[in-house]
Image (cartoon, rainbow, N blue to C red):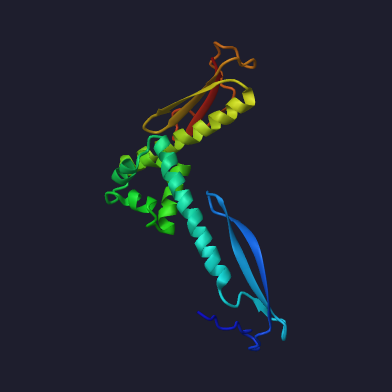
Length: 210
């Protein structure tokens, strides 16, 4: 098959300089991938660009391969957290074998976005299992936020932190108990710091020694 000459879209000339370069891109929440960028420069008028659309095609193919790899990694990573494909399909009310179809390559950008959310926030499956009940969802979000904050406290204090979350009708109380703290006696009930007021509709937080 003889390929037709590439013409400059500005002046129609065929005297063109072809430049190729390997480019690297980063897939969102996924691996890096490389593709060949092809650019032409007209020797007559100086116009330059991807006159044939090769770069876009190369990018599309390389990005798709990276997406396929990322999607498989998402599903395998969730499985390691004991979040199976069947469980995801059940709690999110997806048709049976939907994730199997995605894993085999039949997926969209929407599929990727959906799995990225679950990988980044695996507790979303708990919310889905409870049919997205707003009160339960709020409790889970608060719990996960304070677990993250507990890790921050632990890193700052250099001691283990236990997180206790208690939900009332009008308030949420979160207590961080640490070991080996010097600033607060082990039998003290005085919090190091607190946010909100106990019994109010605000979130209450206390860090105490134990």
